[in-house]
Amino acid sequence: MEFHVMTLFPEMIVQGLSTSVLGRAIARGIISLNAVNIRDYTLDKHKRVDDYPYGGGAGMVMSADPVVRCCRSVFEKIEEKKRGEGKEAGRRRVIYLTPQGRTFSQEMAREFAKEEELVFLCGHYEGIDERAVEMVVTDQVSIGDYVLTGGELAVMVVIDAVARLVPGVLNNGDSAEFETFHDHLLEYPQYTRPEVYEGRAVPEVLLSGHHAKIEQWRRQQSIERTRALRPELLERAVKEGLV
Ligand code: 6GU
Image (cartoon, rainbow, N blue to C red; front, side, top):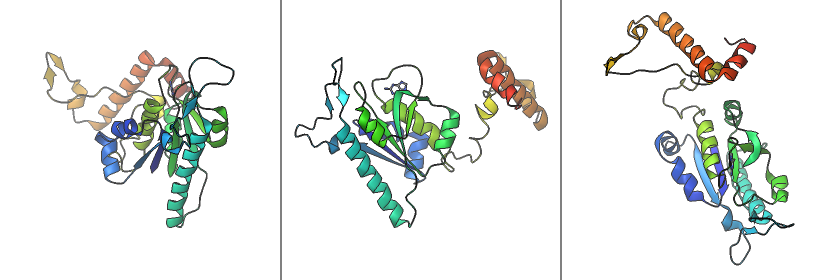
């Protein structure tokens, strides 16, 4: 799967996503990351990418032209690669990270993970000229109700959540299936050695070797935890007949 990120800070994206699990997946060619600097697409002689807002007000607005030109260049690159593979140029998703967007969720991550490539647009300043948004963006996504200085941290969150669902990114092939938010439930507690740590013992059942009992205990723990910490998730699980 290919991730393309249009940003004013490409080094932030590359640095942030090139360690640990995702770094390994990129090195192994399972996913690729192409961070493109929007500033490279300005025609302004001073390389400016922002300007004052029409109607006045605080802050600056990212100009439409560098964004639109950057996006066209990314599309051309994708199309060229598709042609080389003899594939159809399908629908292309362009995801704009903005606090105005739909709140990101595990369901959205699963939807995005079905695509062969995703293009992301990171805004800065007081936002992007609305005409560029109308012209290139297909999805607007927020990562929660708080304000960040730019979309870069948000896009890293989204890419991390999507990439780990791509087959082969996690070494344990099926571990993405049985985890937090599977059936809308939180994870059960985990333990490793030693058996007793500062007087606290690992629950007896986990040492029993009785797999059915362990499964039952874990399921119960998941439900209890969800009830205590995220009652609205448990309600949903019950409504959908998952619990
Ligand atoms: Cl996607 N961008 C910015 N700038 N702030 C945010 C956000 C995105 N999601 C939550 N806050």
